[in-house]
Amino acid sequence: MTREQLLARYRELVLHELPRRARADRWAVTADHCFGRIVLDHTVGGRWYDALDRRRSPAFAQLDDAQLTGAVALAERVLVEGDPLLRELDAQSLAWRGRPPKR
Image (cartoon, rainbow, N blue to C red; front, side, top):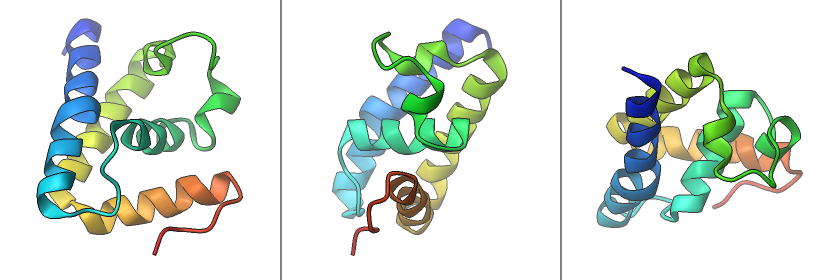
C-alpha cells in the first residue's frame, strides 16, 4: 500500500469500521477517539502524545511509514479478534496513563 492508501485505511478503520463493529457487538470501547488512542499508543509503545506533537493534527499522519503500517495492521487485527484483544490493548493504554482498566 502507498502512504496515502495507509492513511485512508487508518481513517476508515478507526473512525468508521471499528466504532460501527464495536457498537453492534457491544464491545467495551465504542468511541472513535478511543480507538485512535489505543492504536496510536501501541504503535509508539506508550502515550502517543509523548512521542507525537498533539498540536499537529491528525496525530496519525505524523507516524513514519513503518509505524503507519503497524498501526493499520493492529487496527485490522482488532477488527478480526474483537473485544477480548481490544480490552487487553485498552487496559495497557490506560495503564500508561496511570488509569485503571475498564470493567
